[in-house]
Image 1 (cartoon, rainbow, N blue to C red):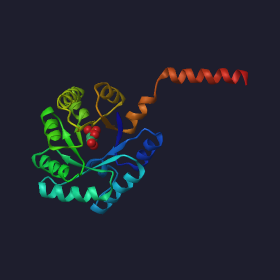
Image 2: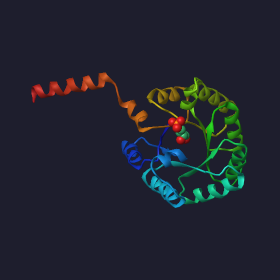
Image 3: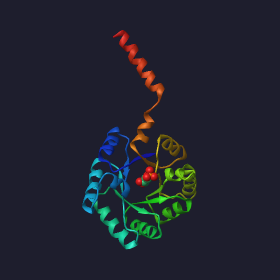
Length: 217
Ligand code: E4P
């Protein structure tokens, strides 16, 4: 299972990279705005800065919602760095754009996916990643993890190569449940990754080991 971090914060990306388990980064326009990154040139530079920190794929989202605009933006993003994956929204022109990019050898991440039907379309169009937003489904009292299970089942039926990128992961149990289901990737905050470290028996066990060592040394 790949671990992506879902942020545009360079300090957090560096921290996750230094942990040694990071496989990539996802961003979106809200996350860029949260870091105060505005203006086309600054945004493009920020993507390159992120690529220079991590070894894996970095999702960069288009703003346009029409096919022509998405193609122009996506090609510009893809040229920035070989690690860039163009993030395209799940809309009609988005599917056309994913097909266009796939035929050109440009990898895509189909974002804002909330149903199996949408995931099926993304795979048919050749998306490298599909991003079902599990946290946002949970927010409206729907079972986000169930969507991941259903997409896994559908993709396995036909051996689709599109990777299931469980997005909108909010906490550590989401990560563990996605791993049980067989999501290919999860993207979430640093806290969800670091939460995997924690167990009170590890803390008390280590404290006891160190205490016993001190007695004899
Ligand atoms: C996915 O790529 C999105 O950036 C992200 O996971 C959305 O998460 P949120 O619902 O916590 O905003």
